[in-house]
Length: 359
Image 1 (cartoon, helix red, strand yellow):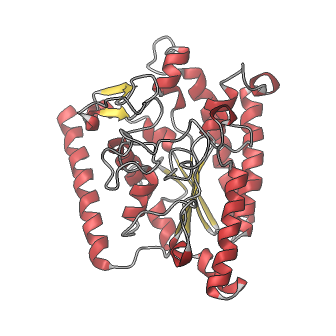
Image 2 (cartoon, rainbow, N blue to C red; image 1 turned 90 degrees about the vertical axis):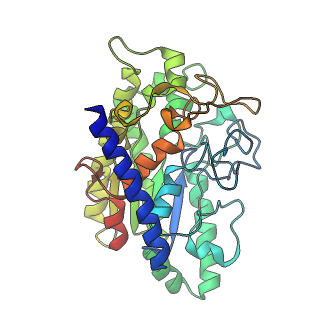
């Protein structure tokens, strides 16, 4: 059985490489621009100049990335990097912190490590760019695009064709709800109430994004936070489980609400298309069958932080986690490919990113 899965894994990698080669020969990407909002899973360097613990512009982070350490919370490419490649872009989307000039017409990455839907999420880490602040930065970019293209209508026409991905919410749990000593939310809300409150605020934020031209939006569901090494170290696995099931149950409430929000947004904004990428289900794949041998420890730091002095594992393709929370490039390849092109009906709802890009 394992050998069959291995064949599927290598076939997927081969298709990915062939896809990149194909896009390189065809020229233009499938969308003219790609804008990214989110947290550390998507950050490409926006936190580098901030006063924060959520900053990784040093080795061994980026050890397998072409440009070395850039501020990506990974050994190599992130999921949004993989998606950008599959869309046919010949360079990665630049962070807002350094993007300037006409390069912004092709897209900007606003994601910030430690950020959340709620403004206070991640404040225990130091400075971060919350979702609301990312929206303000995006509005700054829209004004700049207006100036470059000469009018509001020209900018709107341009932005309507762009792809937007938004991956936010993990820190509203990890660095908020799950820290009762630092945040009151777990005493103020039941898990159901908290998920509902997050979705309500997220809904308003997405409507703001829509109001500034976004029409093709892929929203990343939250992954299996309860399986992350840092949560296993803090809470211990649930009986009969490899993960902290209570955390995953809370996350699933958020994801269920997000799917309902997708339906509402598609109903109320007929000139736009919102879709849900089911990272929770994708992450439920039996990774050991695809060659991953370690799924409960980070390649760098184990269940603790990956520090400047840390020596990472050599067999990085066999680890699901790069550090105590973030996945390795090897896992990001799987997530990015399945977000772009669904391999099972549950991967995306109602459509995958490849289909969204063609609309």
